[in-house]
Structures are given as C-alpha cells and as structure tokens.
Image (cartoon, rainbow, N blue to C red):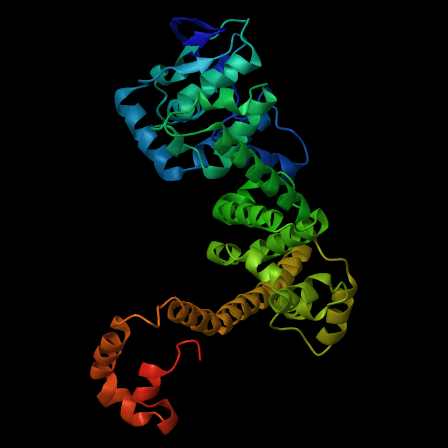
Length: 408
C-alpha cells in the first residue's frame, strides 16, 4: 500500500484481540456510532470495557444477515483477509471481523479465535494517508456496497477533515466519480446535517438513512430556484418547506417537484399557511388523542377524565414532542400534495393555449400562394369530409377552409 507517497509492503502479524481496540468512528458504522453517542449524550471510548460492549453490539447487529454469513465463514475457514491496525493497537479495517472472532471464542472456547491477523501501520502515518488507505480498502467498487449511503457521505466528510480536496478524494475511488460528484455529495451531507438539527435530532444520521434520494431531489430543486433568481431568504424558506415535507414522509418523487410548488402562488399557499401558522394547534389534536388513548388503562374508572386533564398539563417527553411535530409535518405534507395537484392543473390549463399557438404558428408558416395549397386542402377534406364537414356550421364550409386566409 502507499504510505507518504511510497509503496510499502507490510507484514501480517497475529495479535491477541485482548490487546487491540475497536475504532469504528471512521467507516461503514459511523452513522450508527454517532446516533448512539447522540442518544447517550457522550462520546464512546473503546478503552472503556462497558463502551467496548456497546461498540461490539453495534458491529454485530448493523447488518445481521451479513454478520451471520461472515461468522459462519470464519468459523469454518478462519480469518482469510488481514485487518489493518495502527501502531498503538486501534483496528482501522477489520473491526467486525474482530468482533466476530471474539464472539466465536466466547461461544466455542477455541484458542484460534483469540487472535486477529493484521498489518500494522508505521507510527509516522498521517491522518491524510490513513484516510487514503482506508478509503482504498473500503470504497473500491466491490467494497462500497457494504457502506450505507449515509456512511459513504460521512466517509467523504472525514476525508475533507483529514485535509483532502475533492480532487484528491476522487483518486481513492474507483469508477466514474468526479470532483463535482464529491462536492455534491458533501453539499447533500450538509443538507442532511442541517435537517437533523432542524428536527432536533442532531447527529442521528440513521434517521435519514432511507431519505437520501429525497435530499438528492431537494438539492436539484434548490439549484432550480437559484437559477430562477430567487433570494436566499426565499430559498431558505423553500428548504424549510422541503424539510417539513421529508419529515412528513412524502415520497421522493413528490420532493422532486418542490420548486414547482414554491413558484406557484396558489400551490405554495396550500403549504406555507400551515408552515407559517405558529398557533396552529389543531394539527396536534389527533396525535394528542392517540397518546392519551395509549396511556389510558382500559379499566379506568369515572375519574379518568380528571386524571387525563392532569396528564395533559404535564410536559411532553422529547419523543412525544417529536411525534406531535411529525403529525404536523404530515398535515403539511398532505397540503403540499394538494399543491402538487394545483401545479398539474395549472400546467393543463396552459396546455391548450400552447397547442393552439403552435397550430397557428404552423398555419402562418404556410405559403398561401403556393399552387400546392389547393391539392393539399382537397386531400385533407377528402379524408375528413364524412366526419367533419357535415357537422360544422355553414360559415365553416369546405370553401372557407380552402380559400379563407389561414391567419383569419
């Protein structure tokens, strides 16, 4: 592998797992780790035995089916691919393999599962070289599928923080990836990061795991609005609308038309009235009733009404508050979908005008003095005479169409 600009061949060592440390902060498990840390309100430390258990659980449970296959393979064949380890014992590549080996040792007691085979990096390794090496191992075309879309974005972000430019990051990728693609990916990650802050779930990237396509469409719509010359204030307002629509679980195909909705006064009004109405409490009522029903015991006596009122006065938990906020977002999503219908109606309303204009433009382009005009007219009316000539008024007879100027 390349280290500090030179090709290096590293020996493979068999090292006891008990002397090694997990490091999944920078890799295909980054989103899971950050979400756990966000919920716990602190950074996990793999040197802490209790935190090590949590990290190991994340590693083994992220993709259970894939883990089970790998576990079965290692149990039969042993470890085939060596891991990659820093000089001070942190596993850069091979964390899940180490977790599986440790689990197999506990289950079977076999000593062969007490060790991890790995290449040890020199002490002089820089963060930039470390990212390049890991990216080369994990972001090649055949390995990239193991990364979720969110973790791919976080991996790119880590590369930037390691000091690499988009052009330098491209060199660690395989396939048709450009620096512009990297820049768009990083912009998308920033949108996702802002969205998570907006919904008061910072760093919980797993919440956006299934919404990456939505943010791709949101990016395209932001570009479209900028090209239309909208102000940054207007664009920010449109982004907030997009965030709410995503929170309300709209389809990514609906997000694709965000700019069209925002640029239509009628369609925009459908959604913005809900978004801008800070006193709109009605959207919460249905969710509050659901929460109240969930907490109500079936055997409550007649005094339950009084208890319920007391319960309503209590502050909502963060989860309940988020559910209510999501309920409002779903109401806005429904209004937004009405806006989509309005956009379609407006397009349909304009379509006849466009067709008529196109027809008149075509007629105006005909040379009315051409000797071919009469033979063409005869041919046209020979086909349509039975269906149309008999049904039109006397004013619009065959002679009218043949001899009347076409721009009449």
